[in-house]
Length: 162
Length: 162
Image 1 (spheres, rainbow over the protein chains, first blue to last red):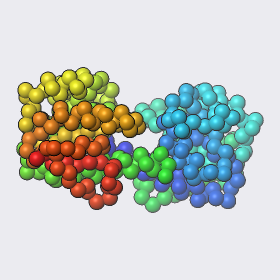
Image 2: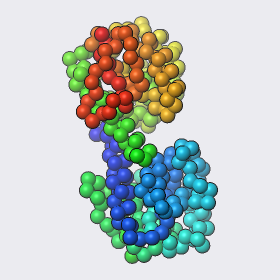
Image 3: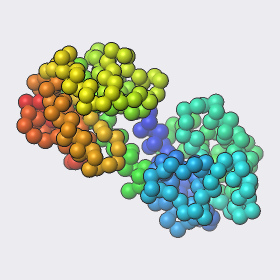
């Protein structure tokens, strides 16, 4: 499989997981959070899926397409390890969905990042909220959910806050 | 359609066109040229499609994944408007396939680039060679070919050197 093939599979998996997550939280109120804006493609997809919800975005330094930049009041600008704890006052127990895609090919670094983020994200999720992540975040408080059809095990992870 | 949807469609179209081009040139000897390396994903796909052919790559400044960097003797390093004319000595009338994807969202700039490249690529193609391009390059010496199933008109262009 070429890198083009595997990139397409990764993007298709991401889209399938996000579309599925939208169905899973249809009855759960609350804002969304995207952990990392990047070029803004995923954020744009979230905006389409959730036109009526606030979508918070963590980003260290905004470098997205101009059409895909969140409004200032929803942008948590800076290091997530500082901005997520600082946002606890307004987001604790409120989020309906969090999405994390480290977006790098550094497998060891991504796992370490996911492990570090887990305790920062967990308190922001309301009961029944969904966490969609490209890196596993198994453990207490998160019940694994099955992936949508066509997404192979290990390519994405879905959890329900419990 | 979100930017994620449209990006996936663009990559799927690219893969479908390249796979189709491989079938079209199955009986035509000669090397391949990739006009622009970028991150190297498309180059990697071409390597998979054409393991037995030389694949030349034009790139101004190599910034691809380390696994996707062409060998020095196949890399035309620098501005294509200089490297393509300079390569005429060894490539004239030899190439079986050329692929061009400007890879930017600047539609006007991409069209101008395609128009400028057309007279530089044309002499390198052998009779019956295929040109696959994301920007139209209509005109004498290039007969339009139908796109593979699923690729909408205007998303890609296929030509046979005539």
